[in-house]
Length: 205
Image (cartoon, rainbow, N blue to C red):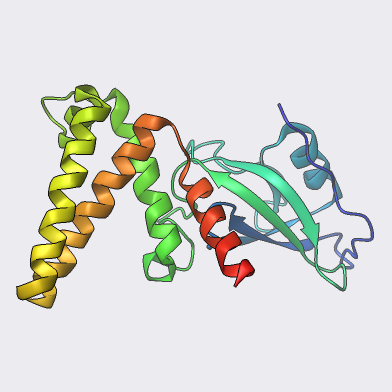
């Protein structure tokens, strides 16, 4: 288990609380905002799982203790004034109790966030019944079959771009992205690696 450090110089309110902004480490999406205190932060640091303080119940709580939708914390950082803390997390399931990926609604999900969610769905299909899931069948048939599908879908994108409607092009692009994500899953290459390469290229320009 990897532990994270509680930032120094945090400024807690008179009630002993400080707001915590929770961000998906892979996509950068803001998932939720909650309140935490020194004890909850210490638990977060020692366990690697996000802990907060419930103002309504006046009690500590660990995200996912009843739903199973936990938040594995990769890092904690303070803001410039020290009166807020940012948790960079790897979420297991939706962050919001409504079932949305973020507490700000699914419409708040960025492109990268949507891809991160697709990555999690594909990973979850690895143990599904192939007779009931197309993704499970793709994964079961192996890398070569998925690569063949990528080639087929790339050709469909070219044909759609040359002479079909915008809607059809969008559909074919969605199919291509999906099959690329299946290839990444079979190679066990996280989407975050791809995003890191893109970010590095952007910084290099």
